[in-house]
Image (cartoon, rainbow, N blue to C red; front, side, top):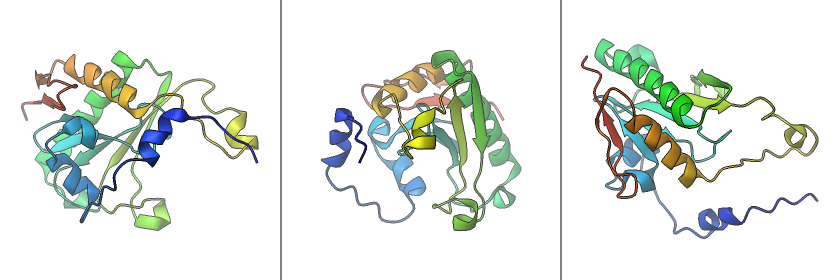
Length: 183
């Protein structure tokens, strides 16, 4: 058996149980401590949440506040706000993490589409040349090279520098960056 030494993961293993009653994408943005909930930025109708099981460092999701399974049920203002927050997420990633590329997408249709949560969300995954290496191919193991807490700091700083940031928040105090797109 192959082993990978990742001592920072012990915090995740030893964490207190976090029972979420209902949809996690409805519950997490309501928590008082945005950092602990992994909510890094908010706009009027959507928010950005770091993926708890990232494909790469910086893997974030843009999520509407309103629980819908796909975009067809959202009003125009929410859709426009979602698109603008996705663009701001791309800019924040580029500003503070400097990826070589980015994948974005939605898994619509539950298990059949690879989705496990029926609340609409758009994945934003930064990519670097060479980030797919021999580990996933030969070892069936994906190595994530950055702790999620450090990723939070990177993205928080990237969003705080956005021209649409109306409140940069305090990352250490658990405040998300507030953005206003004047829609």
